Image (cartoon, rainbow over all chains, first blue to last red; front, side, top):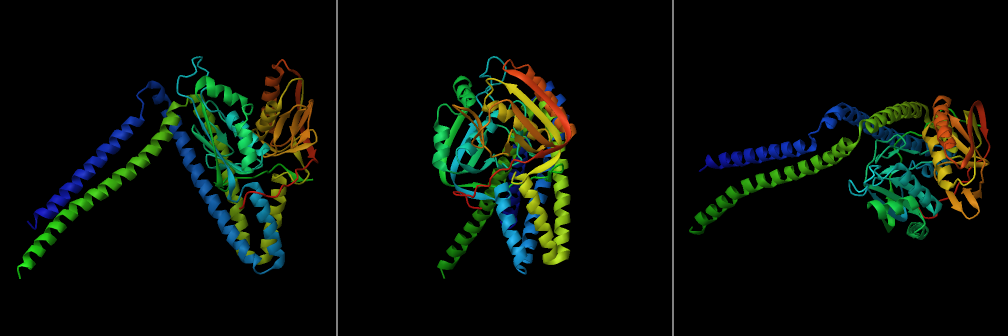
Length: 240
Length: 232
């Protein structure tokens, strides 16, 4: 009896391990669509994934470095009133540039692509484009947003939107795909009213009806925006 | 005395059943974590698999450029940290002054100058969306500071279609639009070229031209709005 118990435990562990491997193998196998097109694109996909990993690592390093600098500056500010005054001014500008996390009342906008094949013309108008995101962000700022993030990426004064079919790229970030979540902190009533206006973001509204895109809006008393973790370099501009 | 053996038996029973149960619980937990992990990987894989080769090539180009910019930022921040570590409050003052100046430029709070392009668009019937697109294209194509007519533009300055026409930051800005963009002239030149070509094919557009300048000055500034609702 004394020997059979560890044996049965080991057997159970082995079975669990085997189930784990089978499960992982099965799911991984499902990831790969058996088509020639995928085969041709695999090298490109691997390159994108490598670059995305580097991008993520670099962002993490930037975040860590900014935190270290903040601590060093706080220590220096404790020793000099001049430094403290400068640090307060910088803190205010950092907050407005999106370099600091922001929270407060606001709205969440969820943009979801329409079902595949819902645009019979083949123009993929069922997809969420970077222009859609740009339009919603502009509408939010026009109606009282003090800060905006798109799928966890904070919008800064130098932010721009690019991409191609169904792909949204913001600043130096990796591509984002549907569903896209836009969060804004600011005048909640103003933003809800603007988003509720049937005449706002007309391109999205029309495609919502025609191709099944979804635009869902919800308000909240305490929305949170992350700090920007990319680069605000502007090497060609100088103060006049 | 009689109670002891039964206690020992029940203990043995509970010990013998607790082992496999714990193993199963751990296995279940591992399976759950693995499934969540693989599912999130699957989402990413699926979205990339759905992308066509030109989209993937575009992503590679964008990400390469992005990573270069992130590397430059890391170098700057590393230098800033080193000077703070070695210098005390004098070094901190210097670093903070430099950052103040930089953030004022980025946020459009001070006049700026540098090389760039001047784009002129004359059209009737263009809307806020057209101007928004033009400014976004230039920002994405190397523009580091932008202005349209006498209005400074940064992301967050609203462009709105009103009954009276297009407003930028609340100021009516009727066409023709003269857009100033300071930044990398090679990138900006390519962007402006593609943009004006496309605009000229629009029947509403009478004129769409651009010129590269070695020195452009933008005097217009954005007025900083204090936070009313948000708290850092």
